[in-house]
Length: 128
Image (cartoon, rainbow, N blue to C red):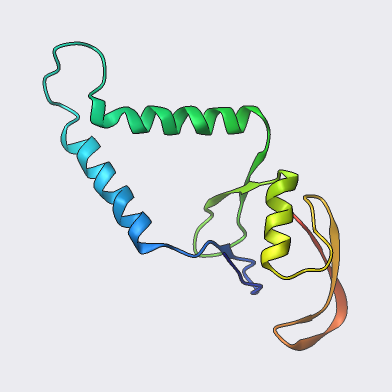
């Protein structure tokens, strides 16, 4: 994962090209077979992954462990989904090498950004 503090406040997840290619392949198979004749109303076996994935997403939203936020990026107002569960916050804090875990809703004061000192301390709220 990659977090960037810029004037546009944009954070992004590092992309895995193999994973993205797999998603493109699945999407192409799904869209190219959408209008094929089926003997029953049941979906094709090769399309069951989308139902399982949808169920996982629905149960995650139902348990309120995810938060959808809108980024303040000027180029696009793209919604971002963050995991606010304590486990995810602990893992992210450990990956960043922090000595103390940061959780959703915590307030952090910054005095430097990108190696430069700020004129006044700025406060940030951890989203997830």
